[in-house]
Image 1 (cartoon, rainbow, N blue to C red):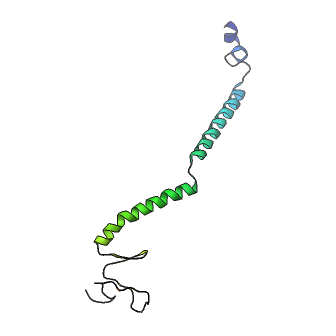
Image 2 (cartoon, rainbow, N blue to C red):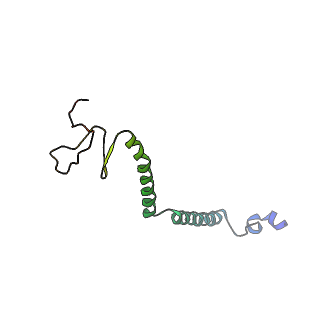
Length: 109
């Protein structure tokens, strides 16, 4: 104890360590901790395929929730496309199915 009081650098809690050596050792320890945290975070990060799967699921759910509202508002479904109320395809289009109760574009309301 007397030696520690008389020469703390030589006999103190960290004998032989100067401030510079302590800072270097501390820097290495902190760097190792940060690298370990980054590695853990990168491993926990979802892959692009996982993100795509979650987004696809949510988009399908949103479409299912939206469909009843569109049908109630008078929209009609033509395959993958939604047709607003009162609109029909051009009669010049050979693939245009007739939609009952729909007006031709340009007809007055």
